Image (cartoon, rainbow, N blue to C red; front, side, top):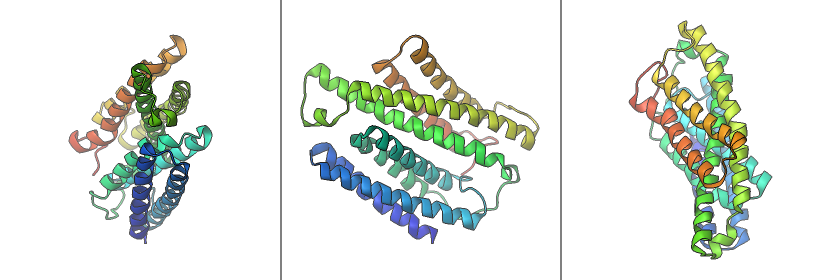
Length: 271
């Protein structure tokens, strides 16, 4: 049953992506409405697929690359829905939903069989640590999308090319505010994820910190976003600088999440 819901998720996210990309080139509000409906339907199907897999596996489905990439896509779409409702920025979906679709498609490239849970993962900390991390990563993805749109909007303003796409894009202040909100939500959650991960590591392996590649790159990611938050709160970093740092932080976060698992074997490696 979960594979049926998963296939339906791919179809709905794919249709939503096409509709959102079409919205970039046409000014029809109906396209945004239909894209939003497709995203909501896709999110519902994706949630059902995740719930069914959870029921079948007996544990939170984030213990291999297939499950983690799929869950990440789910977290991105859920977070996008919340931000879209808050800011009414439909154009953000043209940049975020294609990303979520890519992660879900990538998840299908990995083995989908349900495996026995590694003994180290049989802990209640799995819920707290991983859910906090996934929500943090999802908010940083939204910040990335807002940062990309910010740079595009700024380019239009500098070149004085105020065409149809410019009219659809939110103001620079709105985009900067979305970026900041994502940071103030995501950074505390990432901090909690790292702290709970350290506590979990001590219970599972007898040490709070072992400089495992995943731990090291998680700390690097944390420092990037800590520097960005500190800069915004103390020295007034805004605009282009904040956007560029958000993009850099997102890329490092992706390497921490995906690259480390694939290329840097360690205690946290899983495929």
